[in-house]
Length: 255
Length: 255
DNA sequence: CAGTGGTCTAGACCACTCG
DNA sequence: GAGTGGTCTAGACCACTGT
Image (cartoon, rainbow over all chains, first blue to last red; front, top):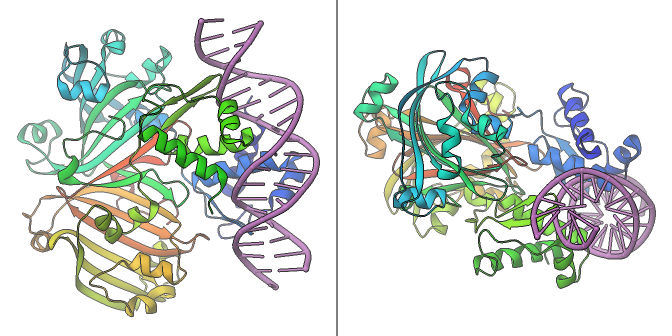
């Protein structure tokens, strides 16, 4: 089913996990791997490129690749969906709907979702829970394109992202802005924390394979509920540090 | 100097920035680009792969690539160094040294920096300023390997990262843990905010091309000073959401 | 210096999108 | 069905690492 290079990449990941290639040791050369798997060197390079992307091996021209270590695998879908994330970690996700409405897009919503001002957008506010404990306040905005489908869903459980995917609206890209904010009186009450308590805010735009925005959301987490992990490297950096004053009300990369 | 595919990638980025390829439109096919630049299709694929990595174009099998938009370019070095970041944004970076000491590694430090308990580590605490205004509190830890070099530096200005690089200690990988915390009384005083005020905390490990840890740092930013931006996609995800209680005192991916 | 990864070529076939 | 991107091959040369 999967491509040969993906199979090889998976076998190498497994071998690292099993300790067959210990941390700090060298991977076999491309030539050796090509012979072992009976593929061309190009295919081997595709496989090891995937591991470099993961961050589990490092390459330097002229020297064999170094095994950096096993990397906790998080699927893209898990990052986009609170429900899938919670479930995969053994928790029971839930949602209390605070409000849901369809209305005319305001300027900022239009910018984010790349629709025209005045077109229909769906606004949804929910308190998200883990094992019935409130941990996150979610303010989501959807373009008219997907609004009717969402209105037909049970919003108190299950993943909107997952259900949209089943309908053919695949989430392929994500842009995230992460900062810290103070809980307002309302937010504090909904999350069961004190007013002014720190919240980790993650504002993100999800888009389809063609770049069409599918959802914009502002998620404010209780500071003790979540930590965000990011890996980067010289050859693959998608991480940036923005000035607070410049961009607090600005747009994300593709907003 | 640079590889041909990198030159082509740069020209394509420039063309997108100039609006030659508008957002939402299609990129020329690989064949057309190969003819235009007089290179093989393989080289074109390396070039457009770089743009996909940036997140500025999206690929789907069977259809031409879609232009997603111009992406703000942040070098890896800019992410690793407060000084370089500040300078590139037109601000004047500074540092007040609170303490600097060499001591025997405790368990947690040893785990992070991959040294043995009891070996020398360098501990450094600084208040980082932007145009003389305090914005970040930094607690850094360095392995003995680089300690003597750092002790010889002027720690009130300039970039440790940059100076280490000049000495051959290249920062090639980064692991970041991002969360929100409350300012303690001390932190509040040093940063000029109220006690309990939200801080955006970024804990990160930098390692060399061979995976050798070079620095571990806990950086706590005034919440109004910084926003972190991350992009990910189905094909390239380095972003994860961790449970707060599980990992508050835990290690990063390769810690 | 030998070994290894980085780049590039030319050609082939398959899987998918779209009119 | 034509066009396009995804995969794979076989071979070549260069740049760099390590001894």
